Length: 178
View 1 (spheres, rainbow, N blue to C red):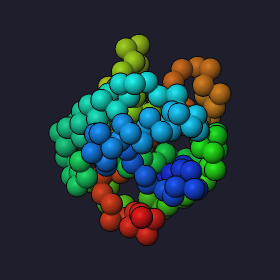
View 2: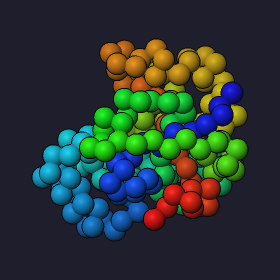
View 3: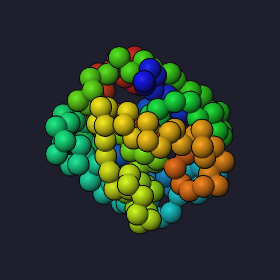
View 4: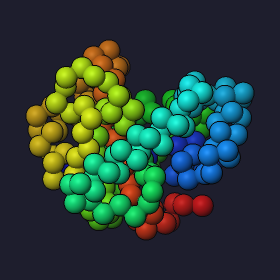
């Protein structure tokens, strides 16, 4: 069912640039620069964003391992299931990569129905809140709920606008990492 994963990024920086890979002080400095320059979606992030992000990434990793996942990275890289052209707007020079899912070991891919932040933080009783899925499981969730970018492309029906993929291994991304 899932053929390709998509990654959205600023072409001037390149793909798979991850604040979580930086030491906390350096990540805060980079995020502060982004805020001052008021460039893209990241400039609107809260002052406690990185603390919350690291906590959510840790929780997602733990949940994934409980389901038999074999993460190699401490913090994931991020992609989406299906195209989300509006994500290009997050960046000054938005660009997208499309990578076949067959390039990845399924034991290094976890999925959330929606972005990690609302998936783990919203408390509205939806079945997929607080959940991390394996590749086999996410197919069932897609069959049940569809792709969020198809039923909620404008974000009017909740925070789910795409299925996020957490990539827990750099090996399949080596051609794009700087």
